[in-house]
Length: 208
Image (cartoon, rainbow, N blue to C red):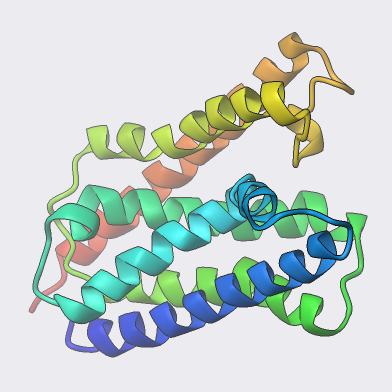
């Protein structure tokens, strides 16, 4: 368990680096097109990947500062939500989205950081954390993250008409299809949370 703190510290640094780099790249691109700071920041926080990276980076930063805490951001159910979320980012991106573009240079660095390195680092951190207190209800709680994002993303889109992911874009799909897409993703997310909860229960049975 003592290894969780240095892994959390390293993960937080990597997470902040990836988030800052992605913001800098977006700022450089959008400001060249005349976008304001507020417009760029608004666009930055539309992406599920960046919101989730922000979430898990804050979880690791707090764990590095308060390694014994199991409340707030470091409560077991929040950490289950976080690990499910960031692994979901990694898997969905690499399976569904990565083939749709080919980033180069610093964009490639940012891409690998937020979609691969941070997820793997957070998974290791979570593995090293205390286990054994989660219940099956916590898996349902974890599945609220993508559901909340779906509502957030669609609501934002009503104002700026920008939808970051093709499977939740009402300009190319009906709301019925989007509902089915989101239901499938939430179901997959819930299954992932259940699998991780099972792993957590097994880890909780380990001898000290």
